[in-house]
Length: 57
Image (cartoon, rainbow, N blue to C red; front, side, top):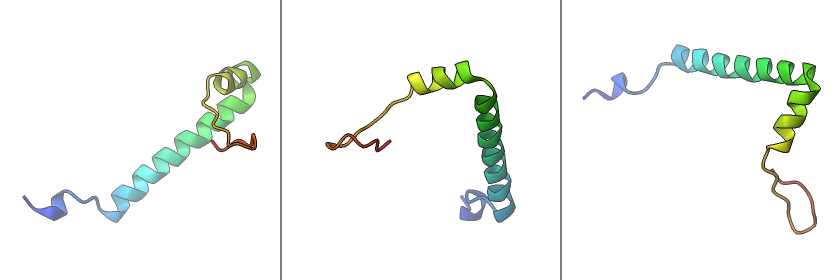
């Protein structure tokens, strides 16, 4: 098996990065427009706090 056939090329990585970035931007836009959906996501998100009560994640 040829290693070059497994490793993606630069344009392939850039294309996938743009797709992911576009998806994140669309999701952020949609969440900003629907407060009920924003509350649903925040209520169902995992929050990790340290010993001082600060949000870590």
